[in-house]
Image (cartoon, rainbow over all chains, first blue to last red):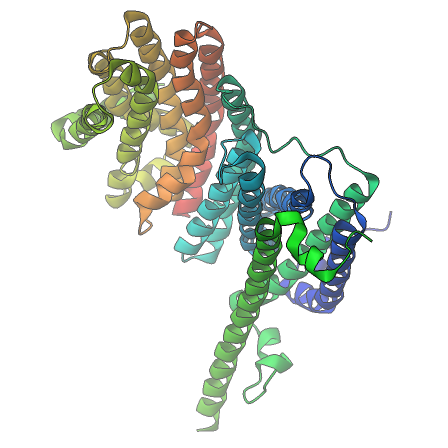
Length: 251
Length: 61
Length: 221
């Protein structure tokens, strides 16, 4: 295998250029996939026997949940890279991922509540998955709060990396304990995990929406990391010479 | 095709509030995130341009 | 080993000389326990049902109160950096700090809980299990909290930030701690819950000091 020049791609300057090239097509892809997913989910997939039209919320709820978990794992991964390899870019990627992850976690809770109300009569049920999602949301907020509160970027990166790693290691423990807690206290056996038995089209709809969210996330992270790079590397020559940084330019 | 008419589509079998509330919430918040990211970039660029102007202004004098 | 003991002794002695911190923790716990019945009414069955949860949450929040200052005093007068530079492994010193925190904050809660449990009309068995669950669980809180304290060292708004970081990690301890007593009340026996708590204690005891030491290095470099 030809040696991949990791150190070259890990350099902020290279990444800035690459990210600039890749985010627009990814954003376009996200939009296309979202339209396709919504089409399949709302126009093609049939009505559910038990939940009527209300079940269609899963086409946004499930992708949001998946993304909130995947993004946290990605943050933890880049956290490890940041601590082990002391790569500045890894720290920036982690911080760029966090707001999107938090947003998806919030959307998962929001859509979960809107799904629960007509189905089970309450805006919030202490279902194991929703409760774990709530805790995940707090983990995100904690990460964002900590990294915002630290002024030194290096310390912020590394502290955030540790938080992400500790959080990721604890997520299975937290999920397990919440599940245990939930089954023991089974009063009304409500579970939002009891999704309707899936028709093929429903699965396709969810998959398309999930891919759309993934493409959106990557595009957003690339875009946001570019801004972070500009902020962190503002004293370098290559930033000073960028066309968008010249005074009088309306970029 | 699932729907007999547009109004049936919007009505969503009575679940309109919940389904469109969910979809609407997602669209709105994601749009806000995009706008926020753009604003961050614009602010950073403005700041960098101002710095450049100051630096070159200093050199000129 | 010597370093561990001497640091532990030093911290405990220092805290006992200025007892306000320990007293704050104890007082907070007592107040929570006393206020709850006033808020929910004197019905004994309700109180017995709520007791494990209320007392556990009280213990958890009380532990949080003292976590803020875990490294603060040493950081301010430069002792912490000395510890970093000294030959003794930082992990060992962290273990001493965590142990001191538990002795000063966790242990008093464990000793107090039988008394406070009486306010909630808990049976002898339930009290025993509650005390045992706190005995196993509060060290876990100290371990996990120390990581948060190290990460937020010297930051403004540190207390709230610390709570935010550490509360998600506390959830399993809370679930199994309070759950142990409730399982007993439900006739299921508390063995399973207490075993899980022990497992959490072993895991956090093994990994937290290391993670906390890393966090200290991140904060001080």
